[in-house]
Amino acid sequence: MKKLLKRAALVLAALIVIAIGAGAYFVLTFKPKQQPASSERVEPTPERLARGAYLAEGPLNCVSCHSARDEHRYGRPVAGPHGAGGVCFTKEYGFDGRLCPPNITPDKETGLGNWTDGEILRAFREGIDRDGNGLNPACPYPDSRYLSDEDAKSVVVYLRSLPPVRNRVPEKQVGFPLSFFIKMVPRPLEGAVPAPDAADPVAYGRYLATVSHCRFCHTPVDQRYQPLPGMTFAGGMEHKGPWGTVRSANLTPHVTGIGQWQKENFIGIFTAFRAGLPATDPQHNTPMPWPDLARMTDADLGTIYDYLRTVPPVDHVVTRRPPPTGGATP
Image (tube, rainbow, N blue to C red; front, top):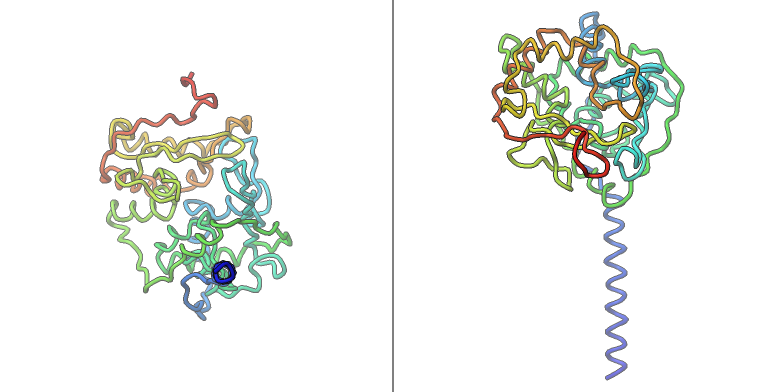
């Protein structure tokens, strides 16, 4: 009887080892949902270059995220070569590991010089790199997938126009289970993405608010980074960095949000930064991309306001900079 029990225990242990090995193999070899990159070549035109520059340097935040930043000026404007690689996300930023925004200049060794237009489009709209691996949604491709086809092509034209810079950023370090969850986020586009009706301010404002990641930054999430139901645009999402912890503002049309704001007030808070960015202590800085959004036209900023007035109001008072000790805000 003892021999049978011992043999059964050995068999069970072997099955557990096999199951763990099979699970580890699955996790390591599992590929995210994807489709082949398009073989199309985007024709560069002056119109696309201008539009791509407006989007990538403005509402999409591509350049600021993928470039060195000046932490001593409010809003952390770009301080290095455009697109040569950004500030690494580490524990200081609330990230478990290390994630460095890559070089997106046309350098062939360290940037996008050997990528096809289709591979670039697939990366920033579907979250798949040229090797078929999933990208971390910290690169907000879940929002960028809503870019119209024409706007996405314009971004490619702009990226191709950047001066190539040889700069290899550090390899990413992402542990389990986050490394597996990253593989679950990408999904292929299901078809063509038309441009919004620019004559409809609410529709166009919804488009700009989506691709400029307003919803992403101003909607609180749970421990799995899933948006909390009924809290869209209600603020309170925590952003950690050298500035400490900052919570995003309530953008809903409730009195605790922007309910009492006039359109000119909303536009003015962005355009004020066109006159220059004040010097500041890095500990008092902000993750809000004021320099990028200040590049937007008054008309485009106004459509975002028009759209935000239509979202459900949420009664949510946000303490923007929570005190580190948990005491009362001074």
